[in-house]
Image (cartoon, rainbow, N blue to C red; front, side, top):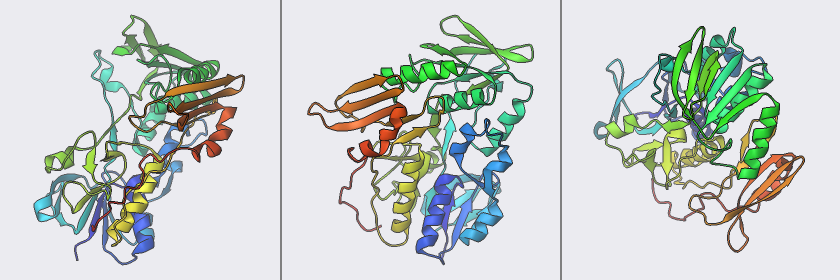
Length: 390
């Protein structure tokens, strides 16, 4: 029997492999990794500096240890060149063709790279995996100030972490507030002010247009004409699902690799999971969607077709200077934010016209209300009852 092949050894690929082994200890299983295949928790990358963690300290198991634990073949430093769905084969970079019974694309996502002008544009850093984090830590040696491009979730987490680690930080974003896509204005202002007290220098409502070298550091020129000098520049503008392999193989791709509720792509023998996945218009690059998807897909792949269901899944933003928990309203929801503000934090409630709670945003001490409010929220992706044979 040809193996089940998983491309990717990030959280999605390894979580699926673990869930599969709970249900089937014997099925041949191969994981292909473009990197060294070590297991680590990606969310830890954005709050490891203040804890003094080197990259190696974040890895909890080697590829060999994971292979033994999972009773699987794990091929590290094994990039995939192409997919051949008609033959059920994966073509590796060395020309080998690996046959599969079922294939799972757990490819992850790439940092969005803006083509800045300037002779320093190619030296802008990003952190998307363990190797990136190791390079970033090495480049921070001797640095005192870091410029962060982007005030979304990752940008805010790195800003807080860098400040805690003793660096000066400047952050630029086109939005008028941090976490502009997630928080109502009052909550965004509370986070902005708290991080400002932690020594974050904000440049909001404007973005960088060019990055030039300036001595041993860089000068960022912003759209509003301001310039910011820093020793290092970190891009945290966002992520784009990795879809090239799927698109080149003729699979349906929109923002991500499009699947049905059984996580089947347009080829019934190929599934997708994690940050590269798009299901019913949703692309959710967070931990809980991955875990829910891994459990459902493992059952489907072991003979019990199980549709993907997303319950309410609040996102915890790691900004200790001002904690944030947010559960955005479902896509397309109609309603308005109602926000309560006090000296210790904010609580935003996204409510429909009839007063139903559809989402929330909590900051500061109000994050303690997370559990009670989550129980009142609708599912992000409710059960449809349409699951059929895999």
